[in-house]
Image (cartoon, rainbow, N blue to C red; front, side, top):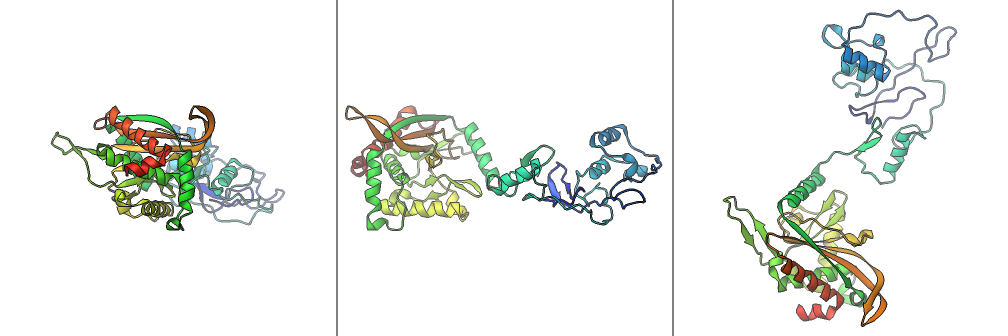
Length: 382
């Protein structure tokens, strides 16, 4: 971003008006009777200009004097690019950009304080820069001063995720069911589990119990772990893998990632806790390997960590179901016939209605909720 240089233009901008650093344009030298930076007393004789009406209109809108420009178009005509360059819209040196003037003496006035992106303090650009510096906008974003908005190129993981989500939403007929569950006993079990030596160095969270409950529910009803496969011959198949590759949606610096734990059902509770811990830590640190991000068969997304009650999750492409876990917090609940304050959480299960009907989806969601309400069921059904 450009640094301010007194009252002169300290930088040029990209073709969309976004700030990029560039050479400064110095004010004209002082002349007799005039302070530095002011025009001479005698008017400058106008010279003939060759420009098409749309170019003249653009120059008028941008406040550019065509007489001051040297045309780079045919027969020395002034082009649209010449006008935009003079107005500071193109990067100096880019095709069609007007050459920068030779630097002159520095302006006598002190330069104003600079914002993090080089914009004078107190301007909209400075305010936007402060927002970016606070980490609220990705560092690769560029501020478009004309539009007063940040522009961020969609690429890499973000682009791949967007394409996958659109494909999933418009390919698989989504159905989502919701269920609230009393997780008071699960939270108590979590505290007791975390105190055991087998879990030393691992953060035991409610997600561990949710993951374990889902794995047990899949063992009871394996069709929820299936996939609808188009074989290219117009004769699709339903494929039910023997292993459960459990995906966990993770917000990372690269965007939303869904790494998975291969054959998660083979792990005991302590092994699952460590696998979840390692998986999410690598993803958040941007260290997830490509192998971690492929081959998942079913996914959990924990929106509760953001304080959200619940949402409607979109299926990870190629999978039959995704379980969302909402915020877990104290709430009024009827317990053993009495109104009491219990620890309650929301669950949402989205599934592909081509291969999972309402009965199967409801049964899986009810199983997960039952095991979280009474962890002894988790032991009994494992």
